[in-house]
Length: 454
View 1 (cartoon, helix red, strand yellow):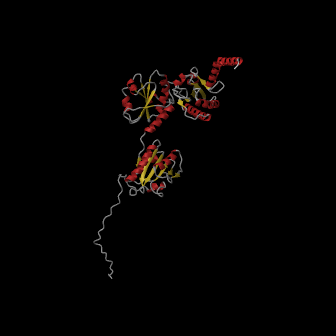
View 2 (tube, helix red, strand yellow):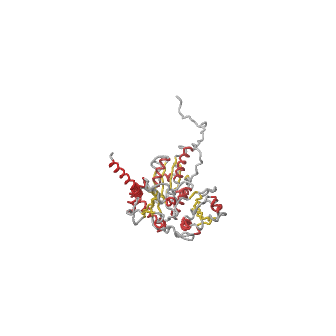
View 3 (cartoon, one colour):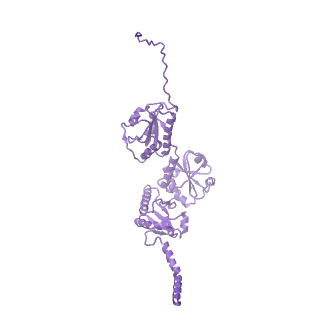
């Protein structure tokens, strides 16, 4: 290499290194710019988050991302499309959580991208569980928006949850429906109760507690007679607060019905009255005992288990001589297992022995196909649906699953009621026995037919 070429090479090298920091800065800047001011995605920072999200009365979808995250880069074009489609309807926003770690830490962000939905109660955002396409994001946003509007229409919140206090109202609830709990009455009222309880541990100075108060009150009124609601000032009554590990406010615990051991479940639902009611209703159903499987022995059996229920599952089991106690108990166990599985459904479960309730069998078209047999009856609509598959746990489960979804081929009942029921004795749980016939004494019977012997 000659001297001139060497000087050119050195000069180019010096030029590159002198501009390298600027080139690197531009590269890093473009790498971090998943969203820009020209997009409809609202860029959030610690300085504008409170104004754009916390104090905003509408619905906000917030993506917490990191610029180097491949999944975030893949989501970005879909997030932009959704933002444009929902402009003026739902805010679509993004936080560079790699840069603004304080915001990511505030909402316990553990991975990227994480999407949070800030609805009526901005203090308790929910996790987005939908798809990562623009269509899926828009569909979920519109669904959430509809729920928010319906809650407002029913008077159940709808603002950001900032208004309120212990005397506030949401949905017309009464403060009397929330029981004031203390260290001295907690065990008697809650732990010794046969009712399910939801208990809020609060502090009078806590802003989140004040926001929750009207929703708690409204939910208590709506669930009156089903679930009891209580509130305990944990700053005064610290014995119970410490017993249940209360470290922040408000903390909500659920105490199941009929359990005397004091075990509590952590409440993990939303903070609006509708969220609380939905959560409590679901837990109430989960903790209900399964319905009984009852033998039909009188008209009252039908009235209680069929006429007063949404649906009545009627099984006709083989005669005890055709299917002894073990066989019958196996069938009844299938019914019990399925009644437990579908216990959330307001259904009645009954059974009878083949040939014992002939009018009932005729009304439900049972008997011509052999036993065991089954039909589900809706007495209000005066229709029934026959089980056409196998009388097995799998076959009946598929049949009941279809019924729970409103599927099936309903057949009209001929009369306004199912049938007249014959009063019978309940099964004693034993094997069947053939009736014993009296022995016939043939000693006094003249067997001579009057004919002479050949």
